[in-house]
Image (tube, rainbow, N blue to C red):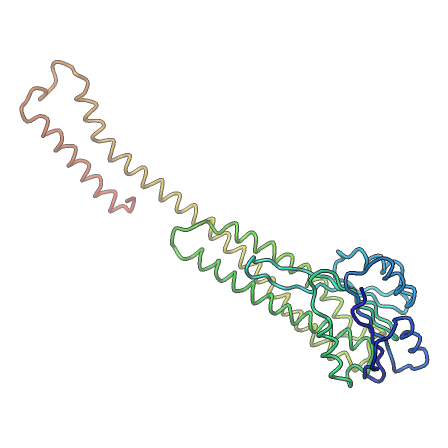
Length: 325
C-alpha cells in the first residue's frame, strides 16, 4: 500500500496529500521539485499503476515485487535502482531480523518499496524534511537520509551481537561445568553471517556514491555519502572481527571439551586401578584351594583387609600427586 506521497519544491514539502501520478506531472514544470512516494509490501495491481506513472524499469519492478534481492545499485537509463537491507537485532532470541528496501531514484522522483520489518522510513522522511537545505538537492539527498538511518541502525545490531559474544566468551572460559555453548556459538555465527550479507555488498555501491561516480549525485552530496561509507566500513570490519572471535571461541570450547574428557578418563582409570587391588586379592583367596598360605590362619582375614587398604591408600596417594585424582 502507499504509505505516503509528497511533492517537494526547493527542499520544502508542499502541503496536502497528492496522487502519485498527479504529483509526478507537477515536476515537469519545475526542475527544482521532486516526488517522494513510500510503499510498504506492494500489491501487484497497485504497484503496477505506480510503475506506469513513473515509467519504472520492468526488470527492477519485478525485483521489487519479489524481494529477496542482495544489496546492489543498478542503473536503468535515467533511473537508479537501489536495494538495501535494514536489520534489527532481537536480543531475546539472538536473531538478526533482516528487512528489505528497494529505491527507484530519478531526478524528478524517488520511490521507496519496503518489505518486512524494515527501518521506519516515515521517521527518515520527517527528519529529512527538517533540513531543506540538504533536501533541495533532490532525490539523492533523500537517498542519503535513508542510507544514513539504515547504517546507523547497524550500530545497534553490532552492539547487541557484541554483548552476546562477550557472554559466550565468558561462558567458554569460566572453567565451570555447564551446558555446552557450541550450539549458541553456531547460532551466533549464522546470524553474524546473515548480517554480513546485508552489509558487505553495500560497500562498493556506497563507495561509488562517495566518489561521485554516479551522475545522479551532485558534488555537494559526496561528503555526506563519504561519511556513510566510512561508517559502513567500520561496521563491516566489526563484523569480520565477530566472525573471528566466534571461530576462536568455538575452537577453545572444543579444546576444553577434549581436555575435560581426558581428565574424566584419567579419573575413571585411576579409580579402576584402585579397585583392581582388592578385586585381585579377593579373587585369589576366593579360589577355595585346600592348601593356600594363611588360609586357616586366625589373622589371615584382617591381614588381607589391611593389605588391601594399605595398597589402595598408597596408590591413591600416588595418583593424587600425579594429578589424576
